[in-house]
Amino acid sequence: MMRSLWTAATGMSAEQLMMDVTSNNLANVNTSGFKKSRADFEDLLYQTMRQPGATQADGNMIPTGVQVGMGVRPVAVQKLFSQGDYQQTGNQLDLAIEGDGFFKVLKGDQEVYTRNGAYKLDNNGVIVDSHGYILQPQFTVPDGTTSLVIDPSGMITALDAQGAQLSQAQMTTYKFANNAGLYALGKNLFIPTPASGDPTEGTPGVGQFGTIAQGYLEMSNVSVVEEMVNMIVAQRAYEANSKAITTSDQMLQLANQMKR
Amino acid sequence: MAYLWGFRDAVHGAILEQRNMDILANNLANVNTPGFKGDRLIFNDIMTQQVQTDFQQGSLKITNNVLDVAIQGDGFFQVRAKGGVRLTRDGAFVMRPDGKLVNGAGLQVLGAGGAPITLNPNGEQVYIDYKGGIHQGPELVGRLSVVDVKDKSTLEKAGSNLYGGVNGKPLRTVPARDYSISQGSLEMANVKVVNQMVSMISAHRAFESYQKAVLVMQDIDSKAATQVGRVA
Image (tube, rainbow over all chains, first blue to last red; front, side, top):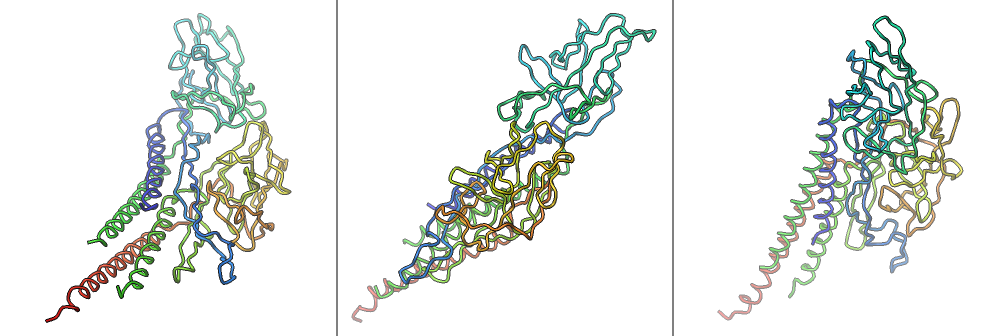
């Protein structure tokens, strides 16, 4: 059968993947700390039907051969860790990292990393995220605390009604050599892989570590306009590939009609 | 079978149009592949068909990703693959934990002098200048090797957005001169969907004509056999 039928089919499934990635980005446009993904493609192997550089019977060399490509395949779905916008919430346990870095929380006994800084207190006064995972290093807000101040360098200070300091602790954030290599667990959580490298612990604001903004949340870095354009591109490319299938099919039909 | 020759020519023509269709389908399948260059089949007669790759500039798509780079003008990036150095126009690079700059498939990106580029994983934000110099803060950590080949017909597509020499022969490259690098963008495929559609229509119609020719010749043959020889 015709090669082009299968070639166009690879194109359609690639565009489908692009559409899947785009719709996940759009679905998470209001997820704080969400990082968008992008599907990357590469061309498949080429079948050589006439070798370029081969010598013909008359002694002339064939300058360009006939190589027919077999379509496309996805090579990576890459997370893009560009900075999201900030949303002011005024909530004292909403934290955003301005710059590089991740928060670490404990999921069961597994250390996981996140950019989502919407924290709460549990019944023991421990700072936890929305799933109840404890922010690392653990901080317990003492009894009698009326306000919690977190400065840009990540120093947490608990104050009572008179403004007296009850306790103080230093937050740490974590950095990876290759953010794109992190494994996404869902729930805005990431775990390191050999491709991302091991986490480096640091103090916010020191070196390449971003500072902490209290009372802010980092919004998703998805740009709706960009995703809309991606969606149009994926849809039109899908359509073009389906036309290639229709045309190949009609040619095959014509071929079948040659015999009466 | 007086029309045997014409019959054979029509079938050959139909096969060529099928091959043309294969190439058009591959172009369309790769319409969203960064750095992809479209192919076209050129044939005067059955013996002189060839596939030509159109190396025209593709449009740039801004991604704002620090390690996405695009070449404007002539030239290729160099990566180290299993069988030797390969060329590519796909600049979607990432950094490995040890700082090595690699492409999406994990192949090391080569710098000037042919050595792999190593960035400082704990260093400052990467800035890539218009000639491919890679800076982290004030420090120049490497330079992307951008090379060109004088005769583009010596390039053979190796899949995975890579080009190698014909028959795996080493490529004769020269440093590219007429180019600029743009950071935070990717070069899109240079396939124009409209052109592909038009070519597809013409391939389809040509195929149809060949098919009609075959049918007519079958008619003539059957008339010759059943009517011409008939005695009143």
